[in-house]
Amino acid sequence: MNYSNYFKTPLEQWIEEQYRSNCVFTPNDLDIDKIALIFGVDIVYYDKTTFSENEERVIFIDNRNDRTEQRKVFFHELCHVIRHSGDQRWMPDLFREAQEIDADRFALYATIPFFMLEQITLPIHRSEAISLLALEFHAYPELAELRLKQVEDRINNSEFMSTFTYTNQITSSLETTIHESPVSGLGYLQEPRIHSLYGLEDFSRPQALVIEQRQGFNWNKPLDLNVEQNYKLHSSSFHRSRHDATVLPGDLTLLPDRKGYVTINLSRVAWRHGQGVTRLILPMDAIDDAINF
Image (cartoon, rainbow, N blue to C red; front, side, top):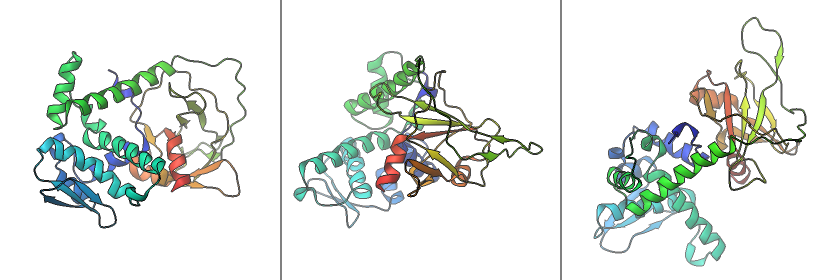
């Protein structure tokens, strides 16, 4: 399995940043009391059914359950506390279902983070790989299998789409803010090259935009980008590299006077990843999150 083709969502990226910035690097560091402290959440252990109180930022854990069950419900409830609002008892069904789907997705990312998973050498046989993940991350085999399949599917989708090229596709000129090259002694202007990256399930909209500036970005100025434009499909094999950086929702600003445009705060990206980045990955989910923030 080629982990370099795995694509992290903005939510995954955010969870990973919280973990790394608080010295959570290995499965053994995923102690639920420590994780609760990182996210500013209290845990109360008692002898009743697990539930969470969002406004008070408290998760009540059933002390009668074993460690694996406690971890499973903790990461699910953690999402409700830090990402959701409202009382599900009085919530419309669609809203409640959306929160549950989000909590299940969050729990997968938080229980078995990709940056930890990729450090583990998995056995060839699938059943053994699932058992190893379940053991390492103190998770149920069903959850480990679901996470492994999610990783495999995302890698396969990326590899599959990298073989496609679209013919007869009209590519309009790139509508981006043009910056002077930061390379000393070069007085010419450069345009970032922008391509679209599609997922296997949905061809109606790109999964992400890939913004490449081989001579380096001008990190002192923001980058305006038309995200509604039809950009050429990324036709070469797509592999993540150390020169890539993922754009997060917090890096984006909407331009109310320019429909379809967003501004990328390049200085924020450089603060996280340094100025050696030559390619930005802008997930469409990040744009949606910025709009709905």
